[in-house]
Image (cartoon, rainbow, N blue to C red; front, side):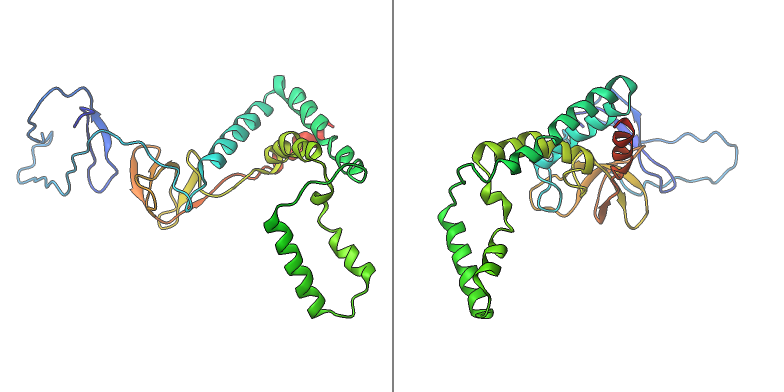
Length: 242
């Protein structure tokens, strides 16, 4: 009522906005027939009075958290710019420069001071090593050392790790995406009807129902799944520029 709008639908259709700026405290529904057939009737099947729209939540853990929503929104914007001729070369150049930072990080990792591991990580590694020694007592020291070197991140310095997280990871997110699941602002499909919509969020924390925006109206439904497009065309375009 605070929005001062009226929407209606007929014959089972989704309601559509019909009137705006309605300045009245009481309303009486009426229907005008343009045909001359006697005996026609109209029945009001459902009527809802909605208040001021509330702020919607991201909907985690069912949907992506706020950080992922921001990452995917930024990634989507970069991909849109990448499809324009003016931005394609500039974005490709920046991405290639950042990807070239991967090799120096791991090449210099051997001589750099290692990151200090937290007590929980050290305790977990000791527990895993003790369990592995009990399960395979005949393993040689060389095999144990080779197994321990599989975790390369422990050999990186803090500076190299920061470079990978702030420079390289965003490029990988643009190429492959951070999270293709349900997220606010993302496209989704209703499993039961097959209709596509944009996810707006959830009204309260922990709710399994989400509010979506159809092409003609918005409604609260359940049983959604993501229908995000693959980023393969972005990789092809990047490869073409190389």
